[in-house]
Image (cartoon, rainbow, N blue to C red; front, side, top):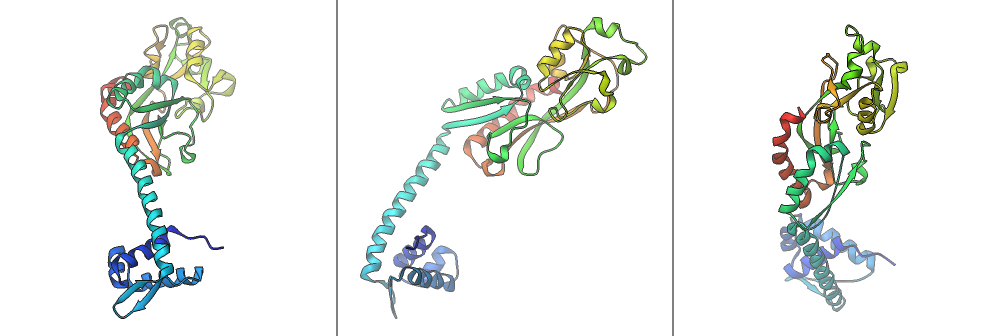
Length: 290
């Protein structure tokens, strides 16, 4: 038994509608020989003569007429399915999965997501809050908003802003450090290597790191309880009244905030709508972020 390919049926339908190979080739945007080869191959594969090759053109056989009727029914079903899928995109309905960090969601994106919902109430937002880089290439999420040094090659996206970083600690802990060598005398609270886009761990010996975490929140709590200094995004560190920024020069003082999606999703109406909205909305946060 041979599987019938829809692409082959389209050639049959076009020749039947146009009445000749030349007219079908023009309609399909291919050359005459391509249409002839596809029809001959189809007839050979299925041991079925579809057309009478007459001097006046191509005329369907009885078997070809029956095939045409079935093919038209299939075409109608395919067009209806395409209309439903495309129509859903145009109506901007359905689920949009977004991954970002808990800090960005709470302090930056929350108000913008609410405004986006008011514009597109039929789009259901599905948030995944994690410092782990979800694998968009396997469609774990539709859109990622997170710090990164550069855009991964398999993704497309746009830079939303710079994110400034600084060193923070409780005033009591900072005052107790040796002022001439605060980096060397301090204990450190760090993100796991690879969990944050920027770190100062290369400047710090391992024995000085007293705590590691996969989120900034536990580092903030530890810093507030005078366990050490934490390297934090400034929009996050500055939001904590119990923490003070240390006036010191450190490497890697900023990174980029990227909004990313998979190449296969960039033409999705929901993704486009969110990208266009967020690029404008985030401008009000540039000073706080950078």
